[in-house]
Length: 437
Image 1 (spheres, helix red, strand yellow):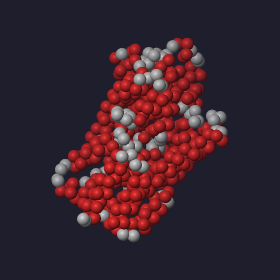
Image 2: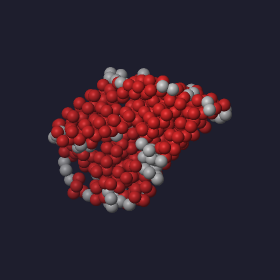
Image 3: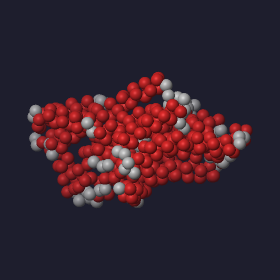
Image 4: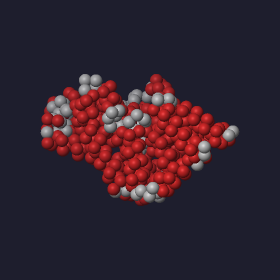
């Protein structure tokens, strides 16, 4: 059997073991060593050592740990509560004001943390009880919270983009710049949809009671300013320095961590227990990501050494199908795999298999990364799994899961519109990187 066919057997074995629920990292390492020894002999052990050291010494990936720590600190800092309350005071007399406040707060929190689970949980804890008390529609409320929270996977400083950059051999700073317009476009679509629904049926989002809003206007604006200032400064310190080239992603992430600690201290929430929990959760999350990334890099090197990626690319390209067929096919595969899998194995395991084909088609890698990012964001809102639904169900157990799913489906359709917009108008993701870099 040729080495190329051994590589195909390796790929098939990988999918089989993943489907049976084996840990992905150890599956990658085990299959890489076994098939690498068959095809390459003892060289596979040198390859393993080299790839693991190269991955762990990549300074760009240090941003994963730093942004994760920043996100966990801000999750407990009470950063968004003041801003959310101020938004309610300012717009509470408008129908559907809670939807607008929720999506605005979620967008800002996504730009300050980059962690989906934290964003959905924090926004849900703030908004869901108020929405229920104000007789807002449960389905539309759940949809607005989950859709807004999932912006954390796309809007920088997204942890996914930090990992995606080295895998796709693209500058993380360029990916951050490319993600801003698609992220803001989706947030705008969410807001327009909720307000149109309320305009058609005002019962979905009644105004808040006057007694809750009876405070001086000066107090409202002061609370809004004091609530907006900390996250705005934090975003400027991280994203601003990275996108303008004043700092690398790792340096910007370090500034973000310092800013998060200062904000948390000023809010009176910085304790040793919080610091200890954040460090522990950061170590846990970063270890998972880095081990998976190192294992997938090792298996990718073994896979490439067998010549299988080149064989697959040559075979697919010999079919002479239009480039868009391959591109849409890859995105559909990633969307389906996004139901049972997190974004990490898709980005670090599945995409590298197709990378030679994508490069041979001369597709702009920044544009492809944005398409993939929006598709993977859609998976968080897509039944049958839809992880965001379970975050909300945990916060509001009285909301029926079926109602949550029904409320999320229109937002998933808006996500599909977002994917189509990025595909049809590549400048949505390419204009800002081209302007800045």
